Structures are given as C-alpha cells and as structure tokens.
Length: 137
Image 1 (cartoon, rainbow, N blue to C red):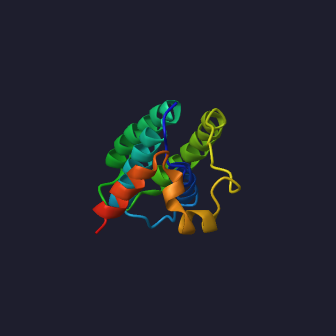
Image 2: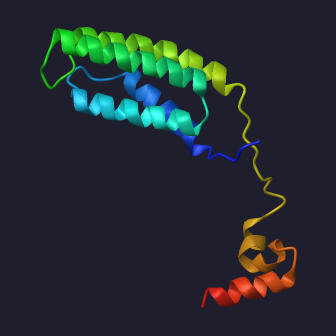
C-alpha cells in the first residue's frame, strides 16, 4: 500500500472540470501547461490508464493544433476535440478511481483537544517527546 495525498484526486477532478468547460479564447500555452499539470497529478495518483489516455489526447491535440493554425489561441477544431476527449477521459478516471481507497484517521482517535494539549502521548516512548521538544528550541 502506498501513502498518497487525497488532494491529488481533488485536483484531478478540478482540472478535468476546467478542461470540460474550457473557454474558446484559451491560449495554447495555457492549455498545454494545464494538461502537463493534469498528467503530473495523474502520475502522483497512480492512475496509469487515465495517464495513457491523456498522452493520446495531448499527442493528437498537438498534431491537430499545428496542422490547423499557428495562432497563439486554440482553434475551434482543437477546442472541440479537447472537450469531447476530456469528457471520455473523465469516465476513465471515474472507473480507475473506484479502485482507489483513502484511509482516514477517525476523529474519536485524535481529537483537536488531545492533539493540542497532549502531543507527547502520540509517541510510544515518552523520552522521544523530550528529544522532539528540545530540538524545537
């Protein structure tokens, strides 16, 4: 089991939503930077199938974008291609995410009051708390 940050999964969802409602006047640079961020987040989230799908989208989008227009903004055909394929990718992400589990610490185990007033009790050995406390000074 690998330890992961649950925020990566939230960020994946936000980026997919952004690309699915992308304004027409979006610059190519902004699109490819965002797709790069989505790829990095998919890698961090260990979503290999979605990562493969995104690689295909980026490859096709670069080719389509270069063939049609050399302007700084995404042309209508590239825009429509990206939106439709991102919606398909979202289905893949949902399917792949259904196999992921996030483990959380129950609030009854570590209450805020306990963490604030008795952090030394979190360590198994009391002498470790003394080391931690003295290293902060």
